[in-house]
Length: 344
Image 1 (cartoon, helix red, strand yellow):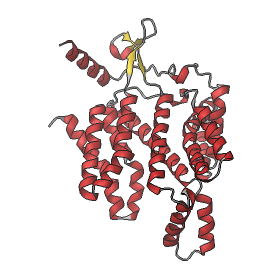
Image 2 (tube, one colour):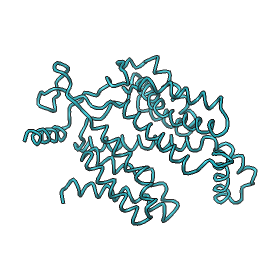
Image 3 (cartoon, one colour):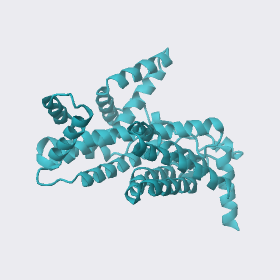
Image 4 (cartoon, one colour):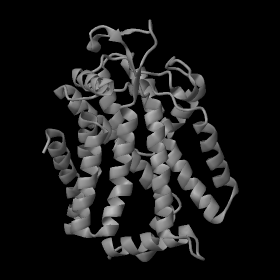
């Protein structure tokens, strides 16, 4: 067995542990937050084949332990999204002659890597798919999505908080039900971004990364994202019933790319100040304790689409925002081996 396959299988085994832990003990749900990390470690160090082997291993373990439907769930929520994002992240092409020299290739042409703004867009699209799967699994029925979700939330909190007055539980469900699915999907997207960033950071420090780390502060989103978000908000405000419910939750998911850009604006601003570490700690501490402030950060990201306070180069779809860091030596060797095989 090759080293690539062995390391990928180990990553898949680790990724499967949270699913098994959730079934064994309720406290195991905490580990689900880190399930994408081993798959990203495998993919961003071993390539698409590595993440595919890791994902298949995860599905096999989950299927054996928990059944076919659980394996299918791990494919939709973990294996397939990780493979898609790794594949996109590793896309690259040489820049035109005269555009720059890449030190990592011994003076060869610089490499254009898939830009961070489009990676964020792909992750958002995956979130929209997750939202659709969640809505399908809940089912509308004659009472509608919100009523069914309200009943499920009330029942869940009734079990977790048996001493709580029923009217308090009902008020809590009233608050959560309209946007619970969208907010949950948004939180899951943030966790995926954190896991991907952590995996790339670990691999970069170890010299095992296949691409340079993207500079997310230079993220530029496709121009069509803002109109799509505006349309979702308009439908949510003007419609009623299931259509409004779907639109509100879709708008919550579509906040994610603007949240990323808003954070990029904050990072650029703080980097121009003294005491950066202190300011970053204060900012993220406040954001952690007052999560609703993320809406303001997302609004800042939405405004940045037109204000461009970071002075990023403009491009259709953000494809011109390309990190030009030197290619990691491992990536150079891998590309040379591929080119040699093709010549043969």
